[in-house]
Length: 125
Image: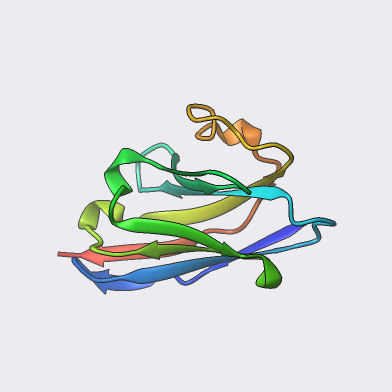
């Protein structure tokens, strides 16, 4: 299984970016994808999650970020609108097979078996 994250870049506050995570190697499309981010000097934090029947967002991005997936393209997107300097980080996508995670544990990094490389997002004020 491989995950390929892309779409990062530099943007001004208030602008938008769309991150993509292409998954390859899964034998079925029943897998969960999560986006994490890590800012310099900070711990990695979960941003958003998608499964067959659930979507979760961390509080700081609710109303601004939208996660979606295109199963035909094996791709999960993270649409980032109204970005803020605090969104500056390296964004990683990760995946796991199996059942949907309940709220509260989707944030746990150890739940995910596969990780992509990061894509840098820089938001300037």
